[in-house]
Structures are given as structure tokens and as C-alpha cells.
Length: 519
Image (cartoon, rainbow, N blue to C red; front, top):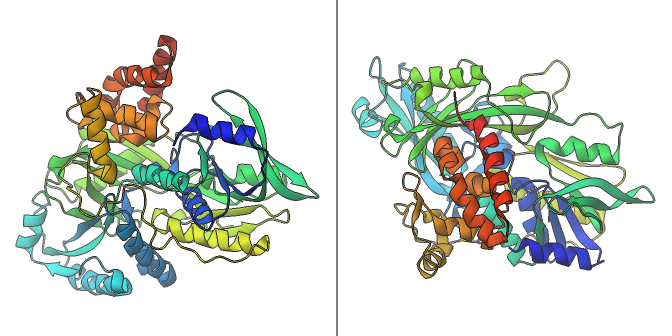
């Protein structure tokens, strides 16, 4: 993934692409891979960095959605469970089996959830990853010794998938480029090209140089998540709002709060949602919330009441209540939900299924959905677009497509396991160029990861490296600020930048990190 080469290719070539896909999050990447794997020439444009917004701020779960089952959304659960199994098979270096325990403090919880979760297991058919069963009080405490003892009757264990969202995004982008696609980050679409009232391309600005480019395509797909209304209004200025942004906040705390490998699932919080506390990169991620936000933004900020709500809810189930001082990082993401009908404002009730809309001009917009179903969303979008453009229908090949980094036998005890098949090359780089020194011993980040991120993963800013190529900002925000100057120095050397660029990058990163650090 070399950005300079790819932008030169776009700049020097006046070809008309089969598809231009706007948006480099889960949906855009899934759609791009779907298109290029069928042999279509495809250009992917992302206004910031890949997975910068919603797609790097999830609860890190690849799941069918226990809550959707309770809501009676059976088809979505079937679809998501199938996709969960496929993703685990296609990216075993990133997607792992995770055991969850629902603690039981009332007599009916064990039988009720054992029955419901057994149905959930059966729905996964041949792609099941584990069987749900009731746990005694003793077994529950052995699995999660930090649970509140008073009135504990045991629990119910079930299994779902866990992953690293931003790392998967980078690997998907690499897969797309390896198959012949062109992907550009920091390429902001500012307008649509129309011929006879039909969308026939886009105008975008390379944010690194300020240069404007006009690129033609047979089909344009809007996969910009919470920003889809911006693109829709370029097409139809009078269009009604299609998206309702719902904010979800997560807190990252020390592993001591859940010292073993089991996660906690609290099935009903005071606001009717579920709350997860999940081990992740030797920390524990706790969330989430559901708050309507008026405007979409790249760096949403957690509200005080959201932080208090998560701490209070977690504290009701743990012997030692987490305090504000225990929070290593707090991050917020915006869900792109279909705008609710009048009078139905509760975002938790809005379907998480995806929707596809085709405007009169032929612009295809895909929205909703979740990380687990990213591949199916892409398949559905390309099927619709091929039909619209009268392309010869080609069968999807992505169900069993191995994602970049694929490695069947993974040593998850190695802190750098998520590089998968790239790990040996990364270690070789560290050895050859004397880049094996730690930048952060506590987060297991070595210098080679910065250089690798720039050379092979299209990292362009300090934030790209510390937020998404490594997960430092999300795991320990203060520690990420501490190592930012050294990261900037390594990047400046790779990108041929001067000391002014270094300082500017550090200052910009510090400003962003303020949102992740509690005062």
C-alpha cells in the first residue's frame, strides 16, 4: 500500500473506473473488496484515515447480536451468525472465540438465558463456536473472581467472537489493494460529476497537496457511514435526512478488574441496553451507551453522563468499583442508524440491519449494519449496482476469501500476534534496521511498528500510527501522548519531513488525545 504510487496512478490515468466507493470504514472496505474480487476496476476514497470514525470505535465484538434475538429480529441474527463464522475462518489472526458470562442474581436468570442462548447457538448451524450452558456459583467465581458476591447464584456462559476493528480495517484495505484496487486516504470527495442527470464520477481533493481531481466511474457508491447525508445532498440538495447518529461510549480500564479471560455481559441496563466488559489487548473495554447526536463528527466526545453511567453500571456487578482514576482511555463512536420515523426516537429500537437506497441519478447509498456483516453489506451493494448498470452478473467469491495477514496457527500470547503472517517480516525489519527497541514497554510497542505502518500500511500521521496501526490511544491515552514525539521522529525520517512537520504532528495528536483522557 503505497499512497504516492496510487495517487500518481489516479492522477495520470484518465480511465473510467467501474466503481468509485466513497468511505473507508467497514462498509466501504467490504464493498470495495467485493467489487475488485469480481474483476471490476475500483477506486476507494476516504476523507480521513481508514476506519478513522465509527469503524475503529466498536465494542470489538464479532457477534450475532443476542439483543436482536430478544427483539425478534431473527433474520438479522441468522445473517450475523453466519458472517461471524465466515470472518473467524477468513481472519483467524484477528478474530478469536470469546467466552461471556451473564451473572445471575435472580432465580430466573439462569433458566431464561440458558434457553435463549441455546437457541442462539443452534442458529449458527455449522459455524457454531461454542455451546451455552449454566454455571454454578463456584464455577462463575472461578471464571470471574471479581464479581459481586452478594446474592450471586451463578451464571450462564456463551460464546461469541472478539476482534480488533481498526487492524481488520487495515488488513481489508491491504487485501483490496493486493487484488488490484486503488485506495486513498485523506482524499475528500467535494462533489459528484453528473451527465444527463446521472452520477458519472466524483470530484475529490487530495488533502495532502490540496490538488483537486475529477475522476469518472460507471457507478458511485456512498458508504460514508454517519456522513452519508453529506454525499446525498451533493446529489439531491433537497433530500431528507437519512441518518440518525447514535453515540456509543467505551471506557478502557486495567485488566485487574476482570483478571481472567472471560468477559461479562449485563443483559439489561437501566436504559434497556446491554453492557459488555471484555478483555482486550491486556486491558478491559467496558461499554456502551446509546445517545442521539445531532451532528456527525470525526472526533465525537464522551459526555460526562455516559462515563458516569458506565462506571455506575459496572460497579453494580464488580466487588471493586472502577473509578474515574482507573480509566486509561475513553472513546466515543457514532452509529449510522436509519433516521427514525416521527415519534419513534429511541435509538436502541432502530434496526441494526443495513439498507440500500438508489437515487434517481443512480447514486447507491448503503447504510446501517455492523462490523460483523460488513462482507454481506458489500455483496448486496455490488449485486444491486451490477443490476442497475446492466453488468453481467458475476458470482460473489468473498465468503471464503482469506484476508491479508491470514494465519491459521496464531500464538495469541505474543503481544504482536495481530500482524498474523506479516509478523515474521516485521520482526525481520526490526532486526535488520535495529528497530526492536520499545517505544512503550507497557503497551508492547516497538519502533519497527511505526516504520512498518508507514511503509506498508499507509500511515500518514502520528494519529494514524497511535490510534489505528497500533491501538495506543485507545488502550492508554496518556502513554500514547508520552511516545508521540518519538513516533513523529521515526515517521519524519520515513516520509522525508522536517522538524516543523514533526512538531505540528505532535501538537495535533495531543489535541486529539484530550478527548480520550479524563481530567
